[in-house]
Length: 394
Ligand SMILES: *[C@@H]1O[C@H](CO)[C@@H](O)[C@H](O)[C@H]1NC(C)=O
Ligand SMILES: *[C@@H]1O[C@H](CO)[C@@H](O)[C@H](O)[C@H]1NC(C)=O
Ligand SMILES: *[C@@H]1O[C@H](CO)[C@@H](O)[C@H](O)[C@H]1NC(C)=O
Image (cartoon, rainbow, N blue to C red; front, side, top):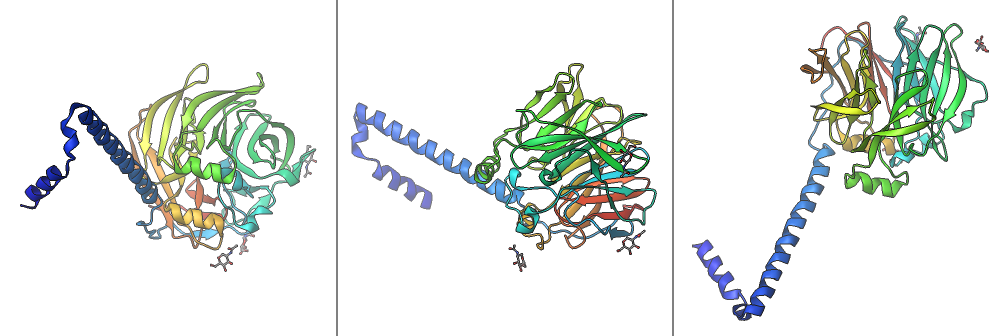
């Protein structure tokens, strides 16, 4: 009944001038315009709802551990990325600047000093030590982010993303393993370094890096992220040629990047999309997408177990908590570690995903990386603590 009455009302409301030919055209355009407005409104609403959903207000972290875990003392200004050498020495970046990434940062973090710390998996009860950086290195302009190491018999080359005050750079250092120090070699800058997040070395003089976005100013970057513009990319940098080349031209916040132990595949995470994409490296270093692994959480850095090839991910499982945490480090943000066990050697992989660790933010807030070595896990965070776990079962 109601429907019939409604229809009658609509019909009775249609303006009488619609009956002439000219007015019929007008009516058509009015209807067309209204449909367009309706569709646009629905799309905008859908976008806003999807952003709200991705912030995870409906999620809750239930703590669990793979074994006993402790906070490693002596490192409180974040441990954003970790690289582990074959012998179990872990290099850890600390003191990130989050403002170029369009995050409001807790004022206490703005004055952090950038450092690289060392943790030795062969001494699991020990704490971190700071690796001194020797040479003509500007320590006052060092805000490190992603890190990657290229190991050779005679030389261990370290690549570190640095958000310098006025430009993005990748610092190249040499690790002296005998006396545990870093020698500064040179800085690489390139017009293609817009908002560099992570780096993976593929030679002593070449690497891939991710730009997680285009804009560096707070509000512009906020809009870019909110509107989900795919303005990030992946660049290959050839040190001999002295320049970079775009290998993935469009991406929604490409973040962590790493490689398979045989070097055949490159992995890139996107926390906004909630995926890890598997690329195959071509002869000219172009990247061919092979597979997308959906995680339904926000993966940050990707750690690759050099023995098994398995992937370990530090994740931000509750987005709004991480955002609030970056603005005020006393606000806890859930941490989550995922393990992707690869069941095949060749991509597209068959795999199993397991959750190895969850913390509500009281032990570690905002986990960004999880490095696995010899039944131990080192869990780093963007702007909080570093945890060490024994891996018994999960
Ligand atoms: C690491 O730090 C903790 C807390 O300060 C301390 O109890 C422990 O003894 C330290 N470990 C070593 C090997 O010094
Ligand atoms: C470590 O050894 C290198 C090369 O021999 C030397 O230049 C550097 O000063 C040493 N570092 C420390 C901290 O002693
Ligand atoms: C962070 O939050 C704490 C507790 O809610 C509050 O006392 C402190 O003033 C806040 N700090 C900043 C910088 O807003």
